[in-house]
Image 1 (cartoon, helix red, strand yellow):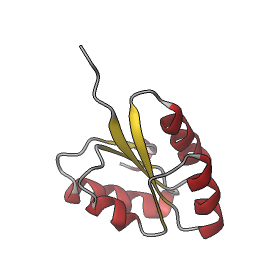
Image 2: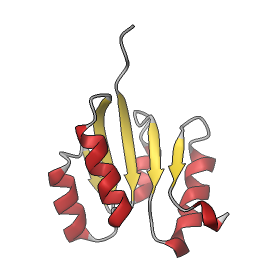
Image 3: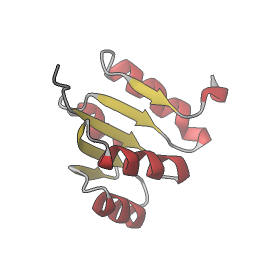
Length: 104
């Protein structure tokens, strides 16, 4: 049985988000990586290192893309819960991974 490749979004490229973006970029079942990061310099570096199909400072752009199959929310604690709730509410059928379960 052939496996379908997926497109993955990463919101936030801090310590864990950058690791997840790099792992996804090299995973054989990932077709493309889409990255959102508020720091333009970090966005440029991580976007280049992961060959990101999308690299944006506005995570809403990732939420509007229908071709993203899964989203990792990896932002810092304070805005994390807001981004998580917006992700879930706008992408009800898209699987997501929350890196900060202690916030719920």
